[in-house]
View 1 (cartoon, rainbow, N blue to C red):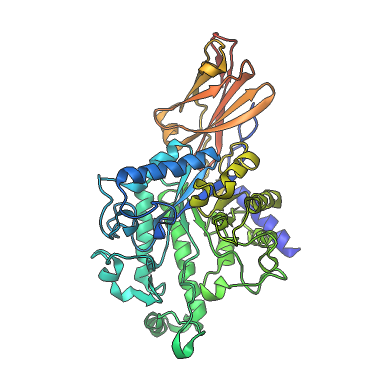
View 2 (view 1 turned 90 degrees about the vertical axis):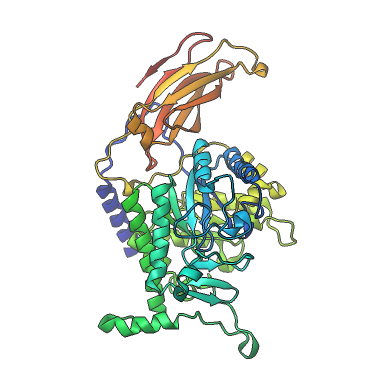
Amino acid sequence: MLRVLLAGIALFALSGCALIPPAPEYVAPPAPREFRAMWVATVANIDWPSKPGLPVAVLREEMQRILTTARQLKLNAVILQVRPAADAIYPSQFEPWSEYLSGRQGVAPGDGCDPLAEWVKAAHASGIELHAWFNPYRARHASAKSPLAAQHVANTHPQIVKTYGDMLWMDPGEEQAAARTLAVIADVVRRYDVDGVHIDDYFYPYPIKETGDRAGDELPFPDQPSWTRYRQHAGLFAWRDRADWRRNNVDRLVRDIYSTVHAIKPWVKVGVSPFGIGRPDRRPAGIAGFSQYDKLYADVEHWLRAGWLDYLAPQLYWPIDREAQAFAVLLTYWSSENWRGRHLWPGLFTSRIDDSEKSWQPEEIRQQIALQRSSGGASGHVHFSAAALVQNRKGIADVLAKTTYVGAALVPSTPWVRPAGSGWLLAPRVELTCPSVAPASDGSDLCRVVVNAPDSDAAVASNLAALWLRYGNVWQLQATAVGRDGASIPISRDGEKLNLVVARLVDRYGLEGAETVQSVPAAGLPGRDTQ
C-alpha cells in the first residue's frame, strides 16, 4: 500500500513540475498513442545489412525494404544499432567503420555513403522515429573476422580492453571506457537528428564457463587491475564489495548518458533494454532465472527510481505460458517498479518465429501485444528483430497487419523532458484539393492535402503531423512527415464519405499543437479551413 501511495505522490509531483500549458481544444479526437518499434541489429549482420561487403545501392535497397515493412505495419519507430562493438556505421572521429558494412573494419562502405544519415532521413520521410542503439562496452564480437583497425580502441587504448572468452570488452571499471562511450554518444546526438539514444542488456558481459579442470565454474571477468587501483585511491568511502563497485560503475554510466543527451538535445529520448527478469530480492513469487543484478551488475530498478531513463524496454523473451518467466507477471512487475511513470515498452522475441521445431507461432506475439495493451502499465512494445517481420515468417507480418495494427498511432509523448513554459505549436497551413468525383479505379477519386508549418521555427520543432480524416462519422488517423517544405498527401475521397480533414503538428516531445480544420467540399468546389 505504501508503494502505491508513494507512486501516486511521485506522479503528482512530476505532473506539477512539467509546467505543460492547458491542451488546445480539438474538433477531432486526440491521437491514439502506442510505441511500435523494431530493433535493426547490425552486429553479425542479423538484420542490416544482410551480409558484409554489399554495394551501397543494395544497402539502400535493404534499408528501404525494412522501412517499407515498418510503414505497412504502421510501426512508428526503428531502433538502429549504430555501434555494435566499438565501431561505427557512420563516419566517426572516435571509432573505425564497422566491418559489418564493408567486410573489413576501418573501410568505409563507399560512394561517400553515411548510412546513419540516410537512415535518419529515410525514416523521418516515412514519419518514423529513428533511435540510435549503442553497445556501451563491447569491443569485438565473436562473429568478427577482419583485423582490428588502427583506430580501434584495443589499439589506441589497450590498457582498458580485456579479453573475455572469444570477445573483447572495455572494462567498465576504467574511467576512460565510460568517457569514450559518452563521447561517442554525444557526437552522434550533436551531428544527427536522432529521436532516441538506446543501450541494450550488455553491461558487464554475460558470464561464460571455464573449461578443463575447472569446467562448469564461471570464468571471472579480468578487472583485477582496475579494482585494485580503485581500492588504493578511493579512501574511506570506497566500496568494500566488488559487486557493489561494479554496479556503481554501470550506474554512473547510465546516469551520465541521460544527463549528457538531454543537455545537448532535451527532446532526444534515452532508453534501456535490459534482460527481462528483475532483482532476485524483488521478484514476484514463482519467477526464477538469470540475475542481471548479480551477473551483469545492472541495477535496473535503481535506474527507474532515479529517473535516468525515459523508457524501459525489458526483454520479455519467453512465451506466455512459461511459468518461471511468465510474460504477464514480469510485465506487471516492471510496471510496479516504475514509480516515476516513465514509458514501459517491453521487448518481444518475434525472431523466435523461424523454421525450427521450437519455433513460436504468430499467435504468441499477437497475444503478447494484447496483454501489453490490457496491462495498463505499458504503452508500447519493440520487436526483436526486423528480419522476422521483413521476411514475414509464418505470416507474422500479415497477422499483425490484419489484427493488431489496424490503425495508426503516435509515439507516446515525453512531457517530463520538455522545457518549462514551452508553448504549443501553432496550427499548420492546410490546402485541400478534390477533383470531380470519378470511378476510384482510375485514381481520380483521390483528394490531395498539403500541410505546411506556419513558420520556420515550427518546421524545425516538428517532423510530424497528425492528419485526421472523417469519413461519415468515423475518424481515421494518418501520421505523416512534415519538413521545411511541408508535405503533400494523397487521400481517398471514398466517394462522398470524406467530409472533414483536421491537421495538427506534433512537437519533438510528442505533444500535438493547435489544429486546422478543413471541410471537404462537394465535388469540384473549393474547401475552407478554420483554425
